[in-house]
Length: 192
Image 1 (cartoon, rainbow, N blue to C red):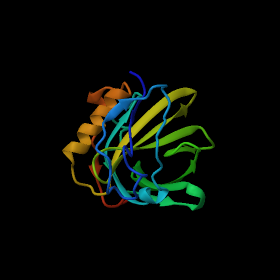
Image 2 (image 1 turned 90 degrees about the vertical axis):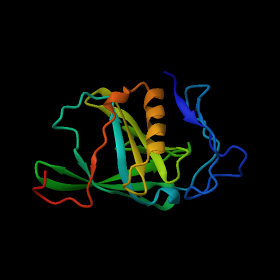
Image 3 (image 1 turned 135 degrees about the horizontal axis):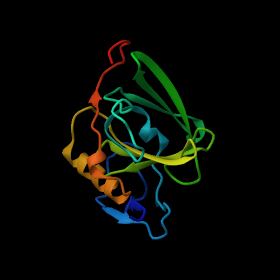
């Protein structure tokens, strides 16, 4: 499959902050295989609390490695357009919090993290308050890709899931590997 991207801001003067005024465009194949997004959404649009609705990964994940429960992610817009994502996860009965600094690049909604080892794209979909966080990078010398469907609330959204399935297919992932985790408000030690 080729690289797919969504044509944004068709016929508009720019990207809105929180989702109002989004165009009704569809997923389109990028002509050069590179992202050529025509508008920039403010980093402020991504600030706040996000809930993971579904994930996809190209690594071979065993049942023990897949997080059965997920916790809200907090994204903060920093000066200069960078973002900081605070994630919480539970491992072996212990709660852990990790902050990921996402450095803005010259390309809209493209960020680097982990000293440039990972590239993170924030992709808008035509469903209000939902985005796809897509990460590419190297892990132990091997290529690694991961996508997350995130939304402003924890509720199921069939339309957002359909858009995520289109994204999954466009990237060559297998749809049957989509994982829908259990949403939790907060991490409590020993609750694995």
